[in-house]
Length: 238
Image (cartoon, rainbow, N blue to C red; front, side, top):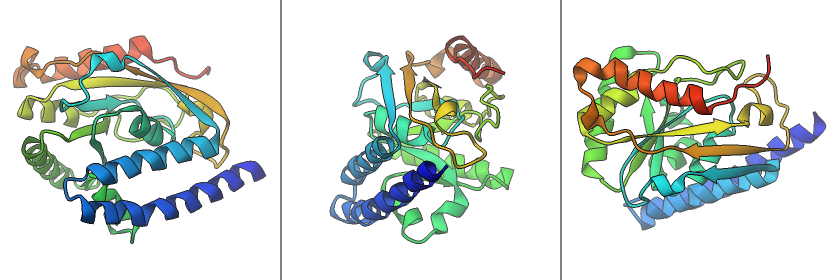
């Protein structure tokens, strides 16, 4: 436990070091490419400090210059740096609206190209997704990462998927790319501060084209994607 608290302290220090550079990067490069690179460097540092290794397979399935909606499972706080580091495409993630107002940290998230949604208000969340759609259509070089379950799984088991990513894909015509994370639950569970050195595996699957679905078959789109996760994700024992 003492080691875990030491690692958390080092992560906080590393984050504090990266925050001003991320904000300044946005001022220097308004397109956000520099801030995104700094954000990926932050992720690399978090993984190194925590002794968490990431193995990636399937990058040949995506074009680094193309826009996607990446969807992933969510069992651990380490899902965020592992995906942010592992996916080379310039991208942002959906985050809780409350984080936007955290001084410096929230500003750095904005500078790095993340999107903020009000999870407590369904109507506002849907409106925010409309805004995300507009922003993505304006910036074809910016992809999005969504944790399809909406929140971290408390026991490492795969939860039901939210429909937001699939509605967004159908509305924008942007393909969905499943990214399955295995092993993150061992690194750090939702409850408790304990951090374990381990190796995570990211499996990047082939894009799912929204042209193969419609508003009427939206649920089938979601079901087909979740079936891929069921096939490729190995939940922790018990």
